[in-house]
Length: 270
Image 1 (cartoon, rainbow, N blue to C red):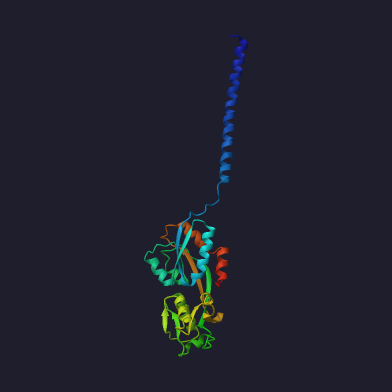
Image 2 (tube, one colour):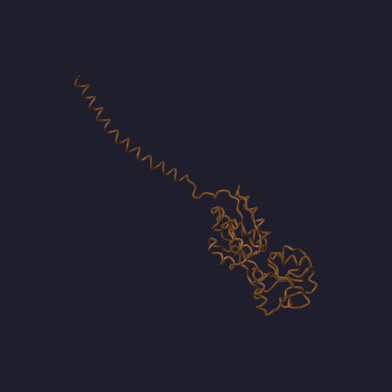
């Protein structure tokens, strides 16, 4: 072999030896750049999976939650929200008995506080106040709480274990007004129904419920200093099979969209 060819071959070998480590370094630098790009394109948070949610809710939320549920389903395609309405004490009993549900909203904090073993951390989503619901046209000219003490009146109240019944007792006791109700009902809607049907002359209900009755009843406001504030806490249920979707719904109830729906219905800001 000629000395010239031998020299050329040696030079080629030396050049190859130099380029191999450089190529390896280039490959190593490209890899982190690709990883960074992939990380940047990943979404910050994922939308909860669509689910069929069952929400146990206080009777006084019946109308507004139908509107809220429809709005939530529209914003979360594939998710279905089904409500079960009853007095808060009935809902608490259902939870303790293991009723299949995903979230709970009561009309008082006391009921929710008794369910800490079954619920997540609650959040107040709305507030409400009581009014006197007088019969159509208010024929007995009921103007204030003390008028309910008139023995000629048929007054209906919610049972004392029901939040609105407990609030009613609180404000009547505060004003030293003694009322002997003709019946004690299991929820606020039942109280209102008695007055609407003329089976009672007056009752104590939430302002939002009375407002839905139109001219069937006359709402008599109770001064703030004589009134009680009802707080509505919402929480997920630990027995839920849709924990992420349930948490998303409970969080949404405090969102501007949900708060507008609640306040348009007469509920006060939480």
